[in-house]
Image 1: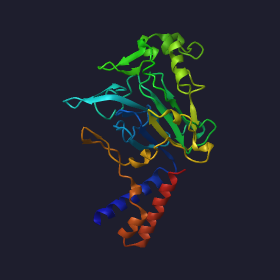
Image 2: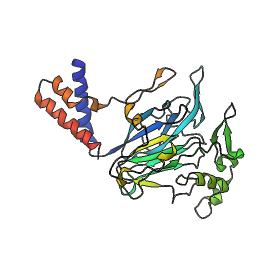
Image 3: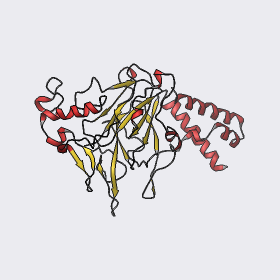
Length: 330
């Protein structure tokens, strides 16, 4: 009973702090789902000058999902690491998307190309979220981003649901030790020439044009970035959305839209995965991975009513907790 009372007091403290210190800033949730036939290890990098999230890397088993809360005005990128191992010294490395930290958490490390990237800038110009899926740094996994509950004329899903590793030109292929195709380099990464990298004299939209290699990516994945100045067909915007990021989505999920078009949230099939495992800690080699702070909503107002003998205190907690939860919806 004493321990539960402490939890309820902690819930009240956090709610008051959120209401009176951070004001009415909104936040978003990102749910990552692994529908691949292999384990993946998502990595997360915040943009320069933006604080890192509570986790910067974790493991997703086949069929597993994880939801993280992201503050307003956050910006950064998500990607999937594949074929990861941990050696006898505890050093963690991945065949694709490795972030160079030597650990499960990327801790400020970026994805080594080639890697499929989902990029976000929340609460940008006119309060809109800007997002895209980019193949500019190459490709390693199919990925789909679906906004949930947002609005806007260009608030729709984007991504690359095609497996490009098998169709990758031989000069761009990345193979595993066993000889399997695990990634596809960009022409910039493969050849290091300014015309492919939009560098030097090619560092502007007038001189940097799509190459035959980037056009292969664009034909397979029309809504994804294929080269540096591929903005017109590859940047999407939403207001007030949460985001579902699916690795290796089934092809029929690519047509899904934001709920703004139908009035209801739409999610790929088996969407219960995004709800069932949100608070379950992940593991790697049997070790627990920290998934963030205790969810204050788990201390419900009804529970706290029984814990505290004073109805006034319990009522205050109920009102504040309800206010906090309502704010997450808008």
